[in-house]
Image (cartoon, rainbow, N blue to C red):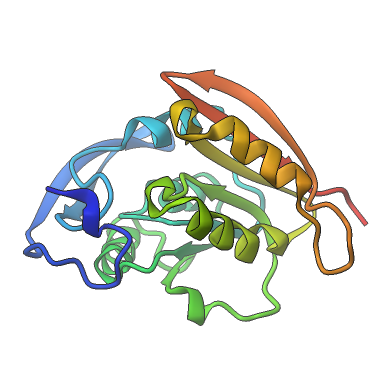
Length: 208
């Protein structure tokens, strides 16, 4: 499958569904995937690196930014019964898969798969987890992060994974330079891990 379509609303490829066994939240589970989304055959290397370094999801609102078929969103819901997960993507096929996988794994009441326009404008999140779509281009990526990272609640953490050779260090510097509408930094950005050519970045927003 070409991944040219994974960040579009309506993938051009045939919607061929398949079951895959994957390891999430310390257990093997069966999920449904399909062509036309990001990494349909397995949990991609970047997401695997991120999952190895993530803390348990907090109770409260968690955002999976660019959810694909749902490995991060499902992990948060499986690990933390009090987490309420918003799985966000522009790809409608991916959103359908997250919904179906959440039902399959018994966490449908904790995972809401939606497009950007379906998130209330005043929603904030105790945690944001993301393997962001770097290949949409730098300007579009910056616009995406500028829309969602300022939604981090006071005391919250955003965890991102980015390939080193696709600009992880420059992205960290860019995030460090950003300010919200009140002129305050988005938070403190740190490189907390490096593995298999990926950097794990953590953005911490100070408590009020």
